Length: 456
Image (cartoon, rainbow, N blue to C red; front, side, top):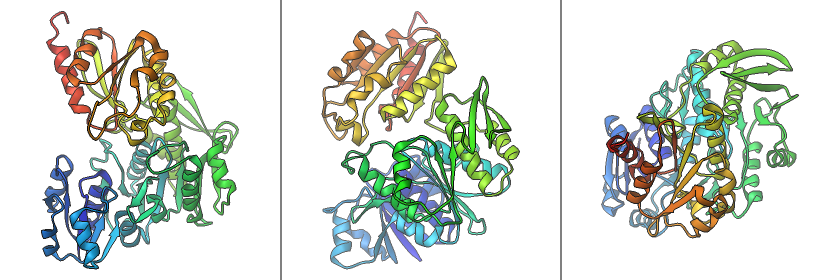
């Protein structure tokens, strides 16, 4: 069987392509601006990639076209598929029907922490000898790849995204996954380009809850009103609550955290990760793994060896005692948690926050008023706002950051931004670059500029 994937170079669709190839399907695909590292990873697996969406691709005559959510009406190849009545489906639906059926799916959903928690969970299962299948939006060093599939292995860990499925299916991707174990991490308003308000997202989360069997497991933090409102709509699955005085609790220590089960000590995790958000991620992953039979001690040992994932406080380099980090944070809550976690780790050392608000939600300005609070832990804030083009900001960045006074500076060009950060940096500083994009390769530009600064 042959599938042709439209929009193959995205993280989800690229991972789906690797899984389809491992499942025995012939896979080809196309995308605009086919680029590494995903293109390299796919080509190494024998997957043919085509640049663009030309109608000549119909000559491939696949058994099925799998459509990514980057596709829209008016695309020439998509129009030809529709006009000729050719078979097509979405990526999440194909995955649910062709791969996940028959697997014990462990899904990680929530506004924040999905990638990290999914990686932790897959890592624990791997260290426990279970060799899980997975599809995750990031790469943990120990896992080496973002997607893996072996039909002989029964467990499948998936990052369960609430973004819409395709232009013809406006339900969230995760409604197609049918998990038996589900972590619902948190729930805030996000994706302002497709959801009008928080209530609309809660409706999608309840669609997910409706699919979890009564013999499954839901893992939810206590005292989260937005999530509790989802469960109050109807819940047919046992819920493991996390938090103080709940079934499961985590208590921070100077080197990690301790786990308590029914208020009895259960295990200690020692690691290098920072922030209470990572403790919450780790506890959720441990509970999910325990739910499929992994002993708590084994899960704790695995978590202690977890090295984090790329683009989550990833140290990109150190120049003359100045550390430059890369982080995926782009929602105000994620920005705040990232900086608070670093502050706990570095004490009184200076933190320089470098922000590119390029997500669809941030571009629209839906969260702009929350940025000053989110950036409070930074000693200096540098914000880049693209003046035009695909990622242009539709609100006044300088006005939004005005409450931070002289601590905040805004730039519309990359070169002056790099120069300003380089001039301000001092030995012992921690520079945190936060964006959900490549940010013009600013991390390497900063490291090179710092290394070239004579007085350093």
